[in-house]
Length: 388
Image (cartoon, rainbow, N blue to C red; front, side, top):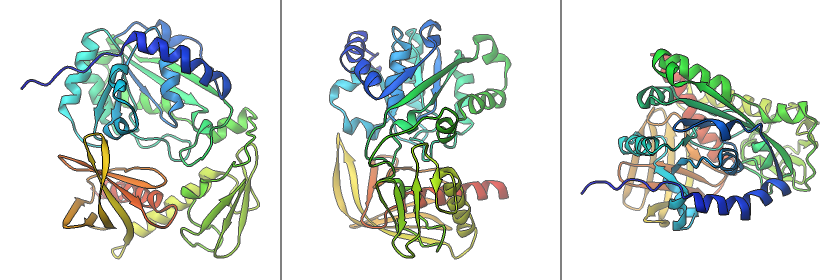
């Protein structure tokens, strides 16, 4: 049976969402600042944007209207939304997998004179900077032969960091550029297009906060930050960091650090969240470079069936030089080292797709272990690529 074409975004629903939800959202918390560029670029075209919170989805919809785009999203996102989302113009796919049917869907939308939005990082920013972007996105642009628009958001991570329990009032600035014209798509190499994408999307939200003197008032300012800053810089203990208010504390050695209203850290080894995260990255890189490296954690396995995750038993996840192995019930999933260049994860879950299913694994202990596992996969892959 022939595959059905995707549904195009309903302009009626988009208009209603902007009127009933969008304008309030971007007045109360996120002050959307845009020069109107996106309204005036004539589709079809591909948009690639950085992705640091879901405020950038709404920001794109509002900035592009009356042009209504189709968004490439993870199939896991469909679980969180009612069936009406399909009328908002979505193109679901499994993260970090090759999906040729998705290319057909994208081409269909473009042929109908609509834009398509792709988040090439394929997940939310971990630390307020650009995640890894693979060169395949530039090859896709070459293949589809339409103009490329880059959209960089500043402030969308500050609005709701992936680890935070609350949203914050911040200005969210939109930098939209016609990065590659229709004529340039054929003339430029994939490498040149890729370089433009990375250059145009590069950002650092903590630097943006400091440079623009953006003070964030929040009594829960740092709560949740221990999910990404999981290793104590003073004693080196992992998964011992706790947070209350604007203070991070190591439960082993008692070291404390506070985060001020401008996002800077005070009283510890590092002045910036990003510096702390970079130090953790280097520590993990040294670990995975050793032949005896091994990460093991207890998780609960869940399988995506239709539109909900169903429990599949307690699981042990092991990551070593051979790759990732997940054992639960009578099942074992094994992913050779290099299968993923990064992982889909959040504070509590790691998502692992197979050829015919999507599984997620809920951590049962160790706050921050999902961040470490993601870092280990990234660094292992990078080291392997460098040895080739």
